[in-house]
Length: 101
Image (cartoon, rainbow, N blue to C red; front, side, top):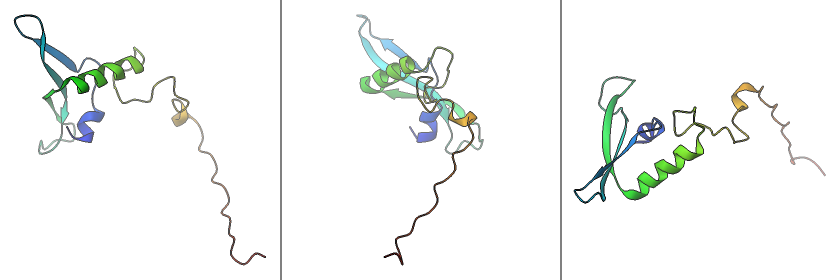
């Protein structure tokens, strides 16, 4: 998966397939594919992934609040969560050590 496809992962994107004995045999992830699709909105695509990826998605779903659909949104518990609503901090004045004694 490309970074843009990972960034578009949403809650519920992971599905599990089981064999006849009930053991999980395959994990699928659904997101948006962009490369070569001819549209900036992408198209729905599915990837087969391994157990570590499935586990990471489960953790991301737990980290995001229940109202957040995107898995790579800033978590509400982060100190940066409301940063987009704040005014930008002024940049510190540049300092120079040249020409000082």
